[in-house]
Amino acid sequence: MTAPVRAGTPSGPGAADPVRTRRAAWRTTWLLLGFMLINFADKTVLGLAATPMMQDLGITHAQYGEASSAFFALFSLSALGVSVLAKRVRSSTLLLLMALLWSAAQLPLLANVGFGVLVATRVLLGAAEGPAFPVAVHSLFSWFPDRERTLPVSVLTLGAAAGVAVSAPLLTAVIDDLGWHWAFGLVGLVGLAWAACWARFGAEGPEPVLTAPAPPAAEGTPDVPLRRILLTGTWIAAALGCFAAYWQLSSGLTWTADYLEQGLGVSTRETGVLIMGAGLTSASVLLGYGFLAQRLRRRGASLRRVALFCGAAMVVSGGSVAAFGTTSSLPLKIALMLGPMTLCNVVLAMAQTACARIAPPRQRGVVLGSLAFVYSLAGVLSPLVVGRLTTGTAHLVDGYRTGYLVTAVLVTGAGLVALVLLRPERDAARLGLPVDPTAGPALPG
Image (cartoon, rainbow, N blue to C red; front, top):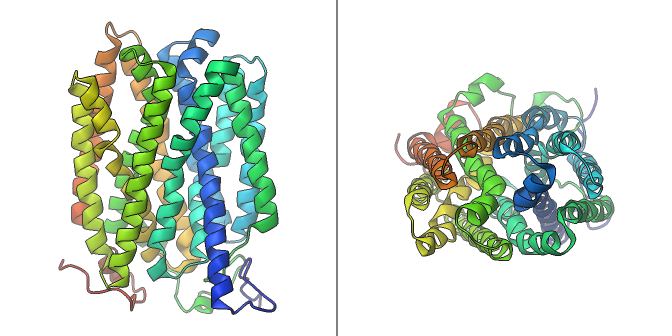
């Protein structure tokens, strides 16, 4: 019988040393944070280059939306497929291959290319980046037990906001001084540098992660039919919440720069600073949420109690998006953009922890991959919808206003669903999974 394999499990002298293991766990966390920083810099560059690219390539807003949506053409399928593959292949190997493919997709845009090459490279980039977050979370969770996961996964999710914050001013300066081609080349080269670091230091930890077939009893927790997991209120609420958050995120990455520049008359450099500010605020929110949630969990609070904060944050964020789209005051728009609109992103961290709680370790990768499959569909739809709304519109700002209102409805609705259905402990018990001895009682119902 084939024995279970724990990829990257420390071995040799000091393997059982908890201090060394914890240091290795956080080293891996920071490496994976860098991975997500580059991941979102890759996404950000297209939005920052929107105006000069549309002018150079002679394309409309609708065509530009199609190019942005092309990024997600294979995103969902690859997210699900590679996450299933993570049951048999080391996630450290998968992460390395993804980073190499990212760079291969970005570097051709250093040359003078046409619209067809732009679309083709975005499809390749999306296929490589689709599994990035679920596989990174799967790898990260191999280093931390359940009660310790909230903070590191919040740090990992921080990469989305920090990637935007770090890359926005740098890439806008490159676009202004050297042209948009060099902005794509820069993120490709940084991807290669990360791949070299990961090849040297990347590893997986001692928590249960099987990469070879083994009987379910090998982990002490039997498999659960996937259909039952995906029909729980927790998974449905997490999927809807992440879909709404990703709709807001991908729409913002694609269109915010063009809206600020063409709709509101903000300069390219000022736009970069504003996008950086929004990224920094989002990063602060995610980090603060991570510390708060971790502290509550260590004091025995249930995930349900943490989920209530998450749902409320989404409702506030949805209202802020509606106000951003309808107000004519630029200072108020900036205050909303740099403040409460960023609260929506906490669901991306909460959903990972909640879905990991309702999945046996052997099935965690495919459950997280299924989550990514659903929320990444928002990346296909939101650029197309906003692109259609703003093409042929007599007043560009009117089209964007409608787009922001659509986003507000999605985010607010998903937040209300999360308040009602996001109950990880209750659903884990219904699935017959072991009780987390470190958590307090779930809220009633």
